[in-house]
Image 1 (cartoon, each protein chain N blue to C red):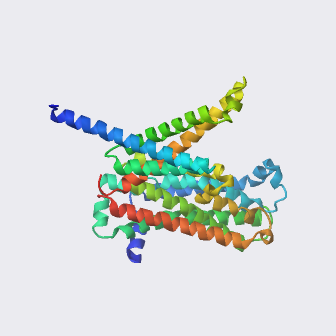
Image 2: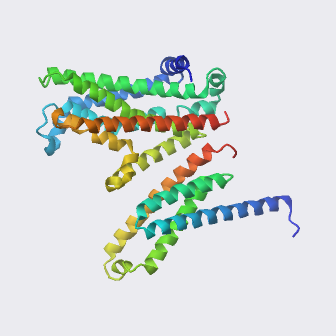
Image 3: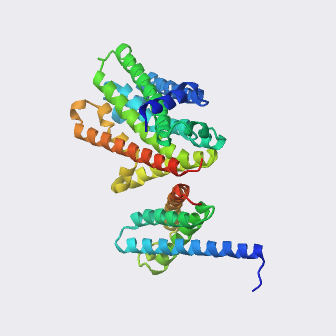
Length: 252
Length: 134
């Protein structure tokens, strides 16, 4: 593992690679959809009667968008990120110069950077709306918390989809299995309401933090936040380690 | 007695299929019944699906997902048939003329089985592709 090589792979994927345009387009679509949701956030909040007393609804709406739309966008962006290279054989040219773990981490860094930047842009747009249209005070703490939590939450899905992409022999299989993975997570969240299953899904850690954006931060227990962040980092690490093992075992 | 080369291969495939399915079904049944004994049906179903998927994927030469789906479906059907015949609580569902309760029960069971099939298939996919020798 070499940090310089990881950065080279990530840079190449983001700006010069065959999928860079596709990746940036998906990030752009995510920003556009989130912006539309901020624009109509007051109307959306009025549809939810239990959320009427929220002062600044844009962060809450944005967080709900990230919770629901984020996993789907990461699926679209990352399902064939590795298996496409294995299928076309272009991975052989990279693997001869860069070790496999650096290659995986570089890919992860590229996807993670694109979505972190997208989430940051969305948060800034939300803050501008909050400042100039809703005439509320600027909340830097909430902005930073939103970016950190959302990017960690999306990284959990990115690492999972990269793992599936590494295992799959074809793009079609990767897409189906990524969908199955997402389906299992959603079903485990709903079925695991009263048992341990919910702890296996990143959705649970994402939803636990919603209290930060739905009301005053004084009411939220920050020990919960640290616990959720810790478990999301563990989730990421486990899937990245599995991806690293999987790529080392594959015949390329 | 005097089998040709292709017939021997076919026989080998059939034997392998038989072995795979029987291992999958027996393992699944043992795990499910053990967890049922301790009133942990839901955990038992998930753990059984994961273990059966892993065992079948380690043994199968090709298409492990197909074998896992058949195994998981078979042991779940056996399990629910046994439950329907021998469980006293089943009289509440089958004993009355109310078809809506029966429909609701069968629907819930089918959804549960589909969920276990998906988990088993995913487990088989991961273990088969992590194998060094295929």
